[in-house]
Image 1 (cartoon, rainbow, N blue to C red):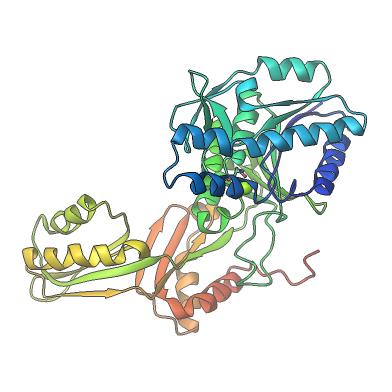
Image 2: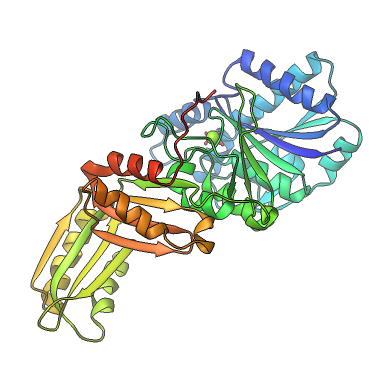
Length: 411
Ligand code: ASP
Ligand code: MG
């Protein structure tokens, strides 16, 4: 007998009909002899509606009260789902976060789970019941209702699975798994059977649309096997797991191609080449709370450096302001900036044991005459910055070069 935590997102419980369908799915799982804990989100659109009501009363609603209001969406769905299960003849019971108890800190709107008391849930499971727990919510030590941040039901599910040492945490959503890249860019992108937590985090730009990243971190930390599947069509989904779990499996070299258009690039040319210059440049950038992603420095002629880095596009103008001043202070020749860039990354734990990934990547970009402006690498990822207008071409070329294209029908 397996113990499984299943999470159904807002679309999956978006109508009464869909709630009934979820009840049938959950019930079948229980019939197969599994113990099931279900976590649900609010019906789709409901959390936004509740936020809207609150904002109509106050432009800055009291954080404690906002949580009282927005947490109600999930209380409705747990009750409705349990009613549907009872209609089908199952023994089931609903629990709010406070009833479980899911204890969080007191950071309203972005609370972190500190511990989960598993006694109530264990008793229910031992009595043969299906338990339905409200996602997204908890209580702090004083009993105040808290919420975990948008998309927080994923984290509830993973935390429950960790606390109860479940065999698997299944996230049912409106896509049928994690893909090698965004299927809207590459129509022959394929669903991955497996991906490691590390890869999933590196693919965040793609993965975050599927799963709350915090939930993935949490699952990695506690070793909870996590599976993403579709609530609407049958299929194995994608299992997110620790690398060690399948060390004897032949893994593909590259698991996926991630990309983002959210960055901008700044270069200081002709910076005097002497100790302390990098900190002189990046110090004020950090002080202005601007996060820096890639950094490249290379020596030009005449004992000067060119110093380039990327920032989030939202902070581009702020960064230009800071650097204009820094340029004078460090005696740089000129400041050049560009926000029409994109970052493309190939991601895969297979890189650890195989050479040649970088050269394949660079060759395939060269074959398309795409110029690489910056390069950075980590153990399982190689990223390049290119001109934004070539992004889709680059992603498609790399997807083919690393043998990720699927040609048969996706269904
Ligand atoms: N209902 C919450 C939201 O819309 C939590 C969730 O769906 O995971 O963000
Ligand atoms: Mg969600």
